[in-house]
Image (cartoon, rainbow, N blue to C red; front, side, top):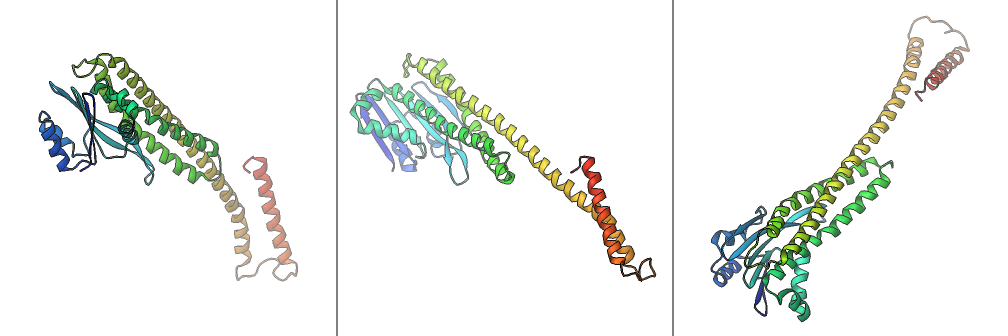
Amino acid sequence: MATEILQHNRTTWTNITRVTPDDVKALSERYPQFHPLDLEDLQSRIERPKMDEYEDYLFLVMQFPHWDPVQRVSRPSEVDIFIGSGYVVTVHDGTLRALTRLFDECQNSEHIRDQFMGRGASRIFYAVIDRLVDDIFPMLYKVDTKIRKMEEIIFSDSERQVIRELAYVRRDVMAMRRIMHPQIEIIANLERIERPYIHDELDVYFGDILDHLRKAEDMVVDYHEVVTGLVDTTNTVATIYTNDIVRILTIISVILYPLEIIVGYFGMNVPLPLQDSGFAAGFITGGMVIISLSMLLYFKRRGWI
């Protein structure tokens, strides 16, 4: 079992990491008021963000991004929260470092424990969500750094690498946007509706979290627009490079075409002019050079090369 229980004054914080059926059973015995469907949701990692409100407690399913270095994309990490009078229960898979750090701080420091748990469960409930939202911004700043690097090398010769990196960043930005957007309505509901087990003065604090979350979403939207513009620019540059290559190859083909006709003509096994002359090869070669130079000069004057 991965259940840790922290008590301070009249507040109890139960933190469960990588929940097991035994953890759920123990939790149901400790809090018999929890609805069986909520306990069932704890063992599912594919729940959509939601809020279930009961007479004496609130159950939230929220998701926050965490970085997957293998696939190079932000994955949704779920945290389930029960909040009632005098208790908070958090259930997660251990990937949300902000939540783990907060529990460790409260466990190891009497001052921090009193700061967050000394005034009831609603204070630690707010602190958990606030830390998780604040932990989004370092990830966003890293995305911004990646975008700036892409802007610097977008006109380099390694367009394939640029396109690949932009595709990774674009996918990551879209994933973060999908993760964050549903959380806004949950936080807005916490700010808007009064509940007896959540202190009234926390409305302002939840409003501050909501502002931060909306700011994070605005940043993600801006990043998506910038990355989309960079992708379009990269595609345009790649198209220009491709057109240049095609133009050069076309010019070479056009120049070689009359030379192939001359070589084919004089290569026929029939009587031909100059075939008995010792200067035939020189005349033919000279004529081919003149034709080639004339065509190059013509293309140059037309601005094609």
